Picture 1 (cartoon, one colour):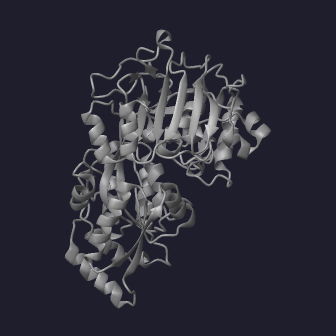
Picture 2: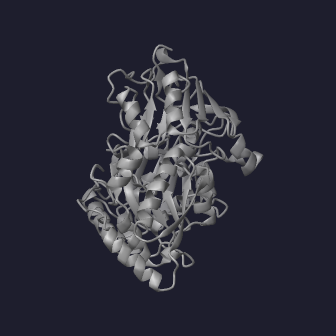
Picture 3: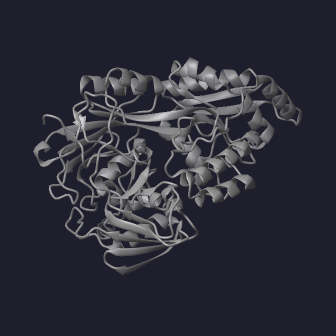
Length: 528
């Protein structure tokens, strides 16, 4: 059987290779259908993404689709993969994955004869060394937290590795479907050193593509491997570029400069769908809102002020003003369209009178009412920030707006410097890997908790979420989390968000996996 995310599981869970590797489809009947076959080999594809990755080493990558996730996936592949249609984890480079009765020990068998681009055979000790790289304190990205769920590893033979975890984790296959599951050839890493390897990881991956050119800020070009372990690779050249703004990116898709485009702005996504482009969307809960820095030095350390900001925000007003009504407006942690996870719990209500009362209380404690709001300088974020500023000033706050920085600079100020009071931000909780995503942001002990958030009730709920084995258990836990966030908020949410990999009808066989990441191993260009 295949492992369903958070499905009820027996004492010994076996993940076996699913028959075939079907592609994610589109609602558009004009989109090329089927999968890559030998007679379809040929053609090139250019994809537009949100940010150019800082390097191509899976260690040190943010992991998101818009900042290098699809690119590193093409080079390195993953041990496991997430099937977004069936919501199950399936073996990819691995052949199988089994657990013991309490989900604390997992045994993985590798496929036989999988080779890196330089001809070396992938062996289980390479997997062990790869996980250790992710666990290193030198890795400051989110993959370290994923890898640290593994307490120890042993390698009985060249194709087998046994993972002993730091506790029960029924959803552990998620870890091996992320950057941690992208095995880098340790011999190439050792020869080049980590810095040079990130710039030129040729020969070091088992994915369908090899790096041809990496020009940071300009383009990334890859060529298909003739001997990929998964069969023929149809699209011979992949090119990744970043075009500023969703409308500019969509225009490039219309003119044929792009064949695939990752979009994250609701109006542009709506336009693309109306025009008949293929659509591979991912729903992100807590996708867009105001993150409040709860660190002791910030005015929002006061929970009364955080509650006031939540009460001051009207999701419907932001949706109409900024997104022309195309966004999934909600204040709730989990949007009602989330399959298998929505419990019926609603978020806080818009209440400007309560917000004014709470702001007045905090001011009486000696605070002057001035607060900084950070947003990147993309047109839609500027509009969001202006709308939010008006809502906050309506309840008695004085907002100092900072919206002159790029998205990359804002990410640095939040994730590295922690230099903000409020920021327009998307925490982005997807249906798969929910515990891992929430734990690293909301656990009081997490090194990736950029928000200074600390609530022992949330820590307890997160611990329960990690060990949940059924959708019903997850629903109960996230419903409890909603109650905690109502009482002790850290995010004034105003929309769940979709990212969409929209694409030309001539491109078929694209496979959507976790977090908007695309797999190109079965993709093809019709008529190439």
